Image (cartoon, rainbow, N blue to C red; front, side, top):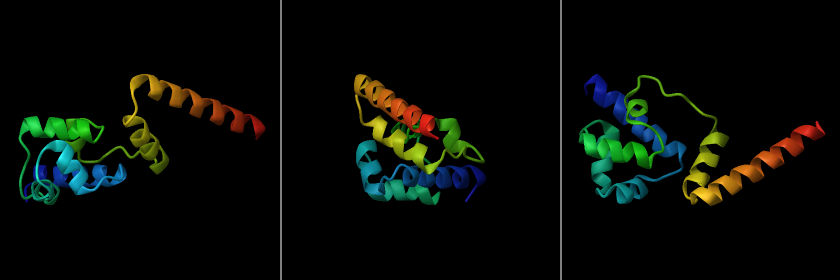
Length: 111
């Protein structure tokens, strides 16, 4: 497996797992079969540029992050919150962020 395929495959799989998504869920949203996504994650097949761009959007990252040697690693909590927010409309996302900030401010003031 060449370096590009190795980096990409590792990063796709890690990002998918960090978001708590199955291969089947990502494959369905991407419009490919599960085996195709599995090949991407094993480095057996490289996605086209169009598919890579759609995949990075689906995984809430950039193509450059998927191709990077080392991924920036947000905390597990940040990953979970990000995935929850991703499913919301812009106004609901703003509302949820506002509530979370208020909760954190309140809890920090008690310390």
